[in-house]
Length: 274
Image (cartoon, rainbow, N blue to C red; front, top):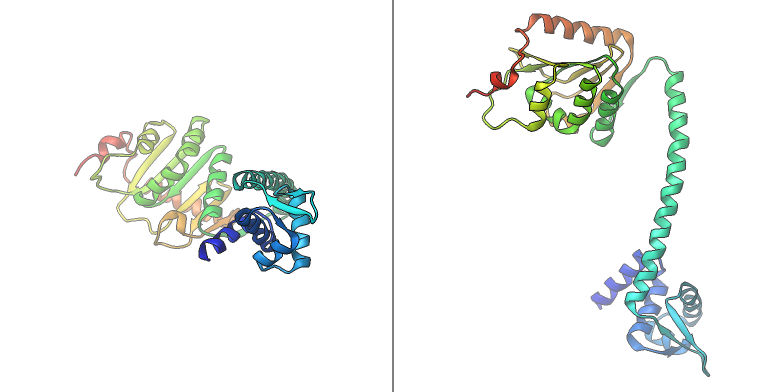
């Protein structure tokens, strides 16, 4: 009984009704049946069985045998699944096309709304939305990307956005990080080595451990993690293009940059101790 119920649920997930699934499985198990017999074996009322058979015939899952009385038989389960899978694929393709149009329509509206609002303070939720916002800012950076963060979160940033950061540096974006000094006890990641070897990427170390993430892009927008704890991907973020807040953050970064130890041009050697 449980196996049959699971079979019904599976067919329903393919897009047919529960009644249609029960009638089809009855025919698949019992063989060729009349409408009356199919109704009795499936436990479905005769009017509903008739409608289900009409729909299943239209879909191609059952065949009609011209006899007196008329009889019906199910096609092979493998053929039925192939038909239902084909329908699902077409539905998915149709949804993909419709969703593309919907996304384009609302992206245009969103861009217009953002352009209409000159100054913004936005809380970006943790997870995918936060990651997308950060990656987009790095991709769009034209002249500078300054960031104060812990070494742990710096590594998380590289894991998420190493390609975007290196590409930004390669197109001339000046990238500066202020980190807490960290004793490495394991091999450096390849992404970190690529970052350190790029002449447009600079790092300074702070005696005090940075308590949050502050990232400034082109001196025009700022992203601030609003929690001191947790992985970078699991922390909501404040995004703003407010000139006052951006200038405060930029001033703090520049003052910290000038006040910290000299730039480590050979960070790889510097960190590979302990």
